Length: 246
Image 1 (tube, rainbow, N blue to C red):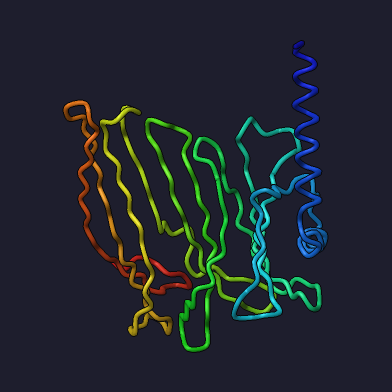
Image 2: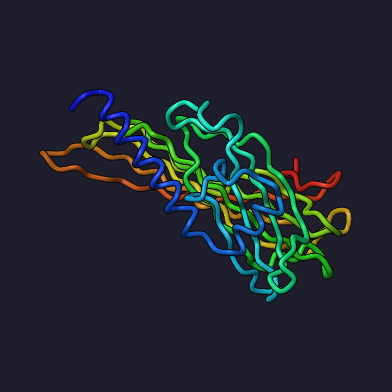
């Protein structure tokens, strides 16, 4: 097949994928994009998400990824995004709260997923937060990598305020020979709201479980040895943001 034919086929597949993804999104998503005045061709529809807020029935949350720069200026697999975090009243069809996370890079460590977390993060008796979790994955088979970061938001009139930014809640790394021998490390954190408080906001205890796995080739069989440990840290509210207590 000639090079020009290959390029044309790839272009047609890209156009079809973009059109299909735009047709498959909800009317509310399209309305939010229109209200934000974003060029829909710059929206990553495959990764952008929407989710009903369980504790506020008339509201939905959106995380919309907008590709920055020109439509054709990104290298293969390398994007810089703005993430528009939106609360939207389904009945009135209007955006009520918003926040923009700037300059999210997706390259060798690639942005692979977004998910809202509506667990009851009661930071004080009258303030409930919600989370946005962003997942990243590495492309290396020799050194696998996966990380999840969470940002917690509280609602204020017309806007969303982040009270915890880009906190690593999960991390998995490895170094192996792609056959058997190597080492893998996994660390996951779980949030627990405590009864103590700092500057009128409850402290957050993060309980970690870490698992180290060492693989070795023994008599032709791949044997794994796991070691699990537990630890914890505390987040306190200082100067408008949660930080690790020193």
